[in-house]
View (spheres, each protein chain N blue to C red):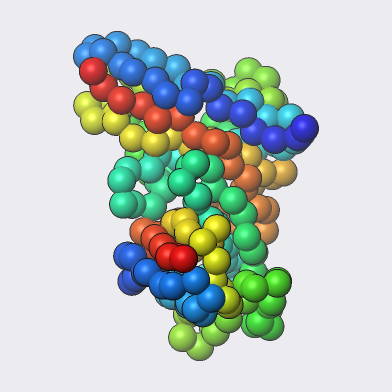
Length: 114
Length: 112
């Protein structure tokens, strides 16, 4: 099946701990994205990547880091610098960046702070 | 600045009623794309439709229809004869330069 997978479904973080959220796609898409969703709100862009080994900050990149070593994978690390990490995190991909391209989303990871 | 407004936070209807979800956007660009996504309780966003700024033709897909009016900067979504399975949060989004700008979402509850 072609699609986007995210793991884990639920993740718990202790104070001062870095955690990494996984995102994998087998759609052969060039562009990948990370969004954060808070309760009752829309999605906000954290980071995006148009090509392997390159990525750009979105609107709320502080406290997060990413890597893009493979076309299929775009992991997101929530660092201890992110003071309010509790949220629903969604990964997306598209064939290329640009207004015409539709972004397709994974099932999401819910991050909770202990 | 680009912005998407979904003024209806929550809507509750009874099955078989028609319901319209409103979306108003702001942009200075002449070329842009608009999207609707559905987010069921499972959380995954499901793509419904994409519309470019040069195509004002309304679209119908089964019980779903979309009305794009550039003059009022609106891209409204109507569900005809709603069903319980339509219960979800619906997001309107504007894409400029590869970035999706989302509205706050409208939570639709369809009761049997």
